[in-house]
Every structure is written in C-alpha cells, then in structure tokens.
Image (cartoon, rainbow, N blue to C red):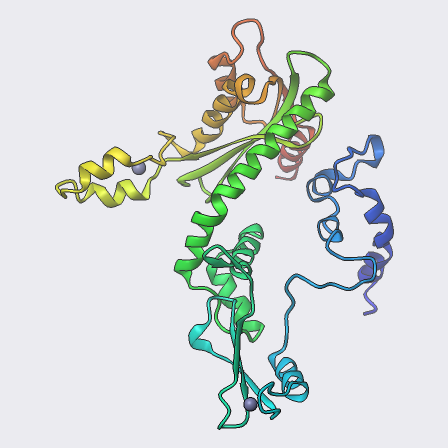
Length: 348
Ligand SMILES: [Zn+2]
Ligand SMILES: [Zn+2]
C-alpha cells in the first residue's frame, strides 16, 4: 500500500468486460493491425468461454465437481436425514479403506444399533474402469505442466486425503489420456491447416511458418525435444515433431539379452528413439521432417520460414529439398530476436 508502483499497476489493469469482448470466441478471430493482442492473448484466448456452456441462465449448476467441506456435508446429513426404516437419525463417515484416488466412499448409517439400514456411495461417476474425478485431476495437473509430486502438495495444503498413487497417475496419463490427447492434437492441427489453405488463397497451399524447438532440459544435454511449426497467417499450430534419443525399454532389455523373452520383446517393440546425434541438432532434424511431410499430411507448401536466428535449421531444410529444386523455402528473420541480440550485445 502506498507504493507508487502498485498504484500505477492498478490503474493500468484492463476492466474484465473489455477483455472478454476482445477474445469473444476463444481467440479464433485474428485481430488486425494495432489491436493485435500479442502472442499470449492469441494462444490462450477467452478461457472462460470453455465453461460458459455448462452454466445455465438461472445461475444454477447441477453437475460438475466442487470442493465440499465434509463437516458441513455431514452436518446437513445428520440434521435432515432420517432412517427410512426406523425413523431414527443418521450418522455418516468416509470409509478411507475404499477410497479410489479423489473418489471417496461415503457411508450413511442409522444411529439405532439394532437397525441395519445403510447407504453407501462413491463421490465420483465411473467412466469405464476409472473415476472421472481422477482422470480430470491428472489431466488438470498435466495441463499446467505439473506431475504427481505437485498433486501431493496440493492435497496437503488443501487438507484433503492423499491423491491417486504415483503408479495410477502415470497409468491414467499414458493409457487413458495420451491416445485421446494425441488424436485431438492431430485433428486440431489438420483443421488449422485447412483454415490456412483457405486463408492463403492459392491451390498449392503456399504459406509461411514459424519454426522453433524446445527441450525438456536446458544445457544441450536433453534426451527429448519438440519442434513446433506455427502458421504466420493464423498464428495456430500446424505440426509438431517430438524427438528422442533415449528409450527406457531398450535400456532395460539391453542387460537381459540372454533372457528367453528377449526375442519376443524385440519383435513387438516400437522404439522411442527417432533421433541420433546431439540435442542441438534436434531442431534442424525436426524442421526437415515437418517440411518434408507438409504436402502429404497437411496439404501445404511452406514457402517461408521464420526462425529464431539459428541458421543451421534453415540450411538443413534447404539441403533436404522438401519441394524439389523449384521451390526453396525463404528465410525470414524475427525482429524480436534481432532486437534481443543487438540489445544484449549493446549492454555487455
Ligand atoms: Zn434405522
Ligand atoms: Zn526402444
């Protein structure tokens, strides 16, 4: 309080009504000219739009998940509910032995010891073999880039029982979410490519992309990297290539080559390794693959490439001749990166 910087910040805040109006349809409309909301605005759009459909006009919600204090819930149960068999009052508790991650098992019992009336239920709906709340929780933590440890911290701070085990967290992530997320991402990228083709207005689908690579770990020692291609026209993602130079299954079986099951494993194994060489080379390798499959998988020809100043990526793409000798992808320089380089040189 009283800090002039804080006051300044408060004044600069955009009123919520204005902000929502700007990205009314999830950032799908590209704002032109000076009204450009910048990369983060484009990426996130109006987040509240996702939930809008679930809330009825009356303001009443009858599905979804809420945080509920058990003291209040059981208080209401004990106060209002009466045993349908003997009319005595009710007692309720959570049976921790039957809990399944965030889905808890609530037991309602008659206070009368001679009456055997009992009602039990889980606090979450089942979706196939798993409970909805657990799948959503894992997805939520992965969405914000967090893992099981963060989930444990979250439950501790919230005074909640422990979350799903680490094993179940991984299982949900790999078996349940990964195939769906992969399919969804692919559908979305194909759809984006169709929009770009319409927007660029030529039959060959000639357009420009921005290419950038990122690594799981810093310092050029990462075993995993991702290369992303984003359209310069619609600012939406068109293609990604995940590169890895390490396979856990291969490492595990390398020591057990005399095992009778080794041959069987080897025949069925789909290896995760799709990159050989240094982590630095991942961006160039990924970009080459993205360019070479653009015509067949996206129906687009990337004639312009915006990089972050790493010339080796552009050189590799040109050398690979993705569209034959006639069409050589042109290199664009990102003014932001030029600014950054000039700025840091001037300062040092
Ligand atoms: Zn009873
Ligand atoms: Zn492998």
